[in-house]
Image (cartoon, rainbow, N blue to C red; front, side):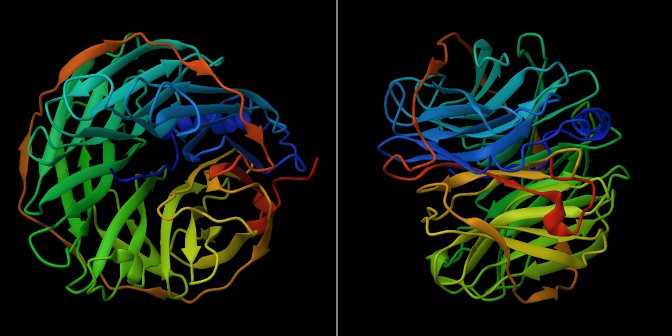
Length: 459
């Protein structure tokens, strides 16, 4: 399973509406950061904001729940007060990878379940009220491994989930559901020449087209040679175009996040290695990468950032000035640290700030991010406690030439068994802020002022 996280939770008109409301919310300046957990491992992967300024986090808990790993959902108030913590799952493993607040005000969560459904893992979609109670839930999948990662909405409140499906031939998948009861509307798949394809992030653009990004995993060579996958569909599931970002061997690329602007331009976050000849990717030198393309997939720019070591992007969003905010993890051989960088829409690096603390970040923890109407970013990940502080950090930045290619592919309509979920969420009491034992959920607030913004007075 790939842990991917999240950029903006929806785009276009819905996003503009929420930003307008959030611009009136006075976020507490001294109440962040927070950690939450138990005696084992707990971490966040996705974060969303509602129109009242509440912060919702989805992730996974090994400390609490019905057995194995369970989905974990936390709610914080605008001032950082924990409102509730709940788990959802069964006797086997469940992982929460995406959370979003819908235009209807309900909370939607996706990921993978091995306790319910048809196979090894199935995609799940939950709708919760603002108190964390289950309204309805659905699974989708076949006899093998099927997993959901990100969520988006259209103007009618229909729900889109990006996913992967081994049950349908190791393909990348988009699923569309109704908002009322989660009934499937359509499904679409993309399969290229690589061994596996997956859509990890999703955005509904201003024209209500569905843009998805992920990774094509090529296991036919050793070490594998993976590439970034980008595709676009209309709201009826009709294919519009697709392309891969493929660095020539022995290079390596993977995608982790996606956002679109009001003009339909697309920004993809991931990581890039110019040379990776080791099957253990943690021993390769990866830098964070952001790629800008036009609404038709035309190349605009590509930028890398980072020291030697392993760096990757977790989320992308926009501040009110239209600048990009990019969250991620930079591990330069010492303690790994979360960072937020800002870019102009031409790829110019404006600022880079790191969360400097003594905590240990588990390898592969992708920090999901959401941005409020004042340009403050909220990052959800995992660490041993909430100690640390934001400070400027520097690293080399550089551009890359256009490496977008058109790969052969097959389109399909994947099939999955749909089952209803009725098991409720369960309230949990964890240790806050001081460290619960293993890795804990960590929620950080990155003020807009750290990237040079002036729209967020400290209140």
